[in-house]
Image (cartoon, rainbow, N blue to C red; front, side, top):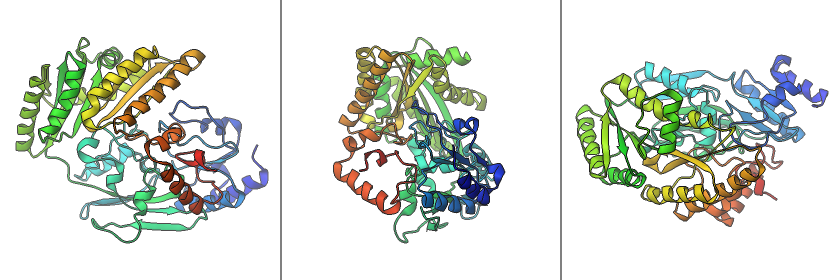
Length: 463
């Protein structure tokens, strides 16, 4: 139960209607999309003006209260699970697009703007904001920056960090810090936008974001390549890139995922296929036509039994809906769905697929695999029931094995979902002890009391 005097202090900042401490309210913000234990905060605060973010942050620091900023809570690594007795700050009401500049190609937004709505607003102005995380229908831009979210277009267009031109945020004392610019070039001072990207709320509280916009591609062509052999599909990914073709998207689905998705939406997918590659090239119409022809040829040369080219916009939408259905379809099968994010160099995808098959058999687990094969970002998805203790122990061992394999191949813990609480224990394995110590000193300096989203990234490893 939160102290009444403390509640009054928060109410003085945001008003009584925007301070919640009842168990029914705090429970709603005790978990996120990660399969981790929930932790109820003591207070949930909903600022309606960004200036209030600074006041709330300073108040939390004054009282030594753990502070977790939350957008839609869609992250898959426990980044928005609060600390016991802490404060959750909701950004849902901070949802203004402050400026959408079509001359200089940037936008300034508040952190609670929903990603898909922003992308639609940008498209209505004839421009393009490429990052498209799977949760974009509800995820927020502040959360996207905090987690450095990716999406299907990451192969060609990059991830959120590639579109963050500037940022203002409140430090732990509630002071407003500004860095970056509206200009294409800006090398003034430390790269604080870069530092804040993927910081998962551990270094500051976002106030405004300046995002880069680009012209949309003039044309696009989608196709579905069907394979009877997983390894052939995996090797085709590298062959396409080796041919100096950079598709906008290059996605992979294994047989289990194909069958699950087809059962989920009756999408008419080839359920007997061992694997699918869903590919889209975009750009100038002449370039698209040339690259689409080359991709089709490469797929055929590497064993695709068919390559189905999208006939029109409706057919194209149907192809990509099948891919976007992968996670909800898999999550529908068992009470617990563990989506992992291990990423390997593209050339290691065939080896990683073999490793996942071996891990699935060794630990007697169902693992469906799909993901952004073009950038090596696979999503092995373990279907289980966390209430089954023995099976859950095997799941945890399988997760360790997946990251051991990915790191041994020169890969990384996360392509787009962040570290949060779920993967903090692996950080030194990918980086070094010195990296952890350097990060620890930086965190201690910027947040001496450790109130900013404690327990995430390296915080669990602090003294």
